[in-house]
Length: 79
Length: 234
Image (cartoon, rainbow over all chains, first blue to last red; front, side, top):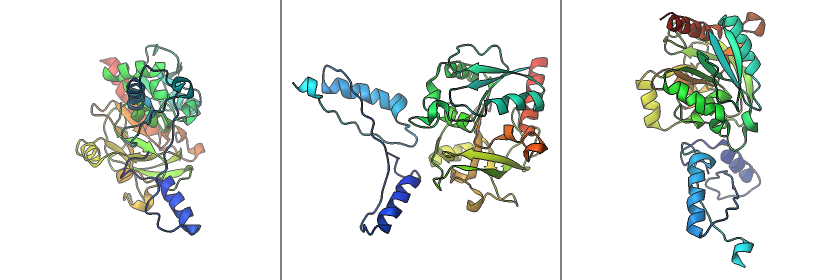
C-alpha cells in the first residue's frame, strides 16, 4: 500500500470517481497491490519470515510503501 | 575516455545516450548488457531511460537487482561516476544508491514534453559547464517521475547542495505550476552524498543538438568530459 503521507494520485482518482457515482461517505481511497506467493514452509512462522525478507529486499519499497503479510495454509498442506 | 551505457531489456534511450556520448563528449561509447559482470574498464556509466523489465513490480525495481548493477554499485562505491536518466534515476533509487523514490505522476498521465530546469549548482562532474541558476529546456518522458522522500531526507539534500536540477517556470521560479509531476520541492535531479552518482528524470541526452529542439543537455556531457579527461590526465 502507498505509505500514509505519500501522494497517491490513483487513490485520489478513484475517490473522485466513487463520489461521481454517488457513493458518499468515503473519506479516503488508497490503491495498492496484492502479491500472492506459494511458499513451501515447515510452519506459518517460517513462511511469514521468508515473505518478510522478500518484502524488505524487493517486493515493497520502504520509502513509499507499507506492507502487510497474511499467511494461509494451502489446500495441500491443510489436508 | 570510454563510457558505458547499460542496456536492460526494455531500455529505449540507450542509443540516444550512446550517440550523445559520442557527439557531445567526443568519447568512446560501449553498451553494457544487463547480464554482464564486467564494466569493461569504463570511466563512467550511464543508466539510460526506458522501461527496464517492463516496469514490473515498480519502475526500476527488477533492474536494481540485475547482475550489472552489482558491478555498478561497486564502481560507484570506489568513486566511479554514474548517471541515471529517467528509468536510470528510478533504478538508482530502487538500488539504494540515491535516496527517495519516484512514484506515479501527480496527474496520473504519462508526460512527454519539454520542461524548464534550473541548474542549482555548478559542480563537477555533472554540471560544471553550466552557470549556477542557468535555465535549460530539456524534455521529460515519464509516468512515474514524482520524486518522493521524507522531509528529513529532502532537508539534507538541500543543506548538502545535492539538488542539482529543479523544475522552474520561464522566470526561473520553482512554482507549483512549473512542477510537471508533483515532485517534492520541484526536485528534478539529485546526487549522492559523495557527488559521483546523479539521478535525473529529464533527458539531457535528447537535447544535444538544435535539430532535436534543444542543445541545452550538452552541458552535462561537456562537464563529464572535462572532469574525466582531467582525472585521466592525473
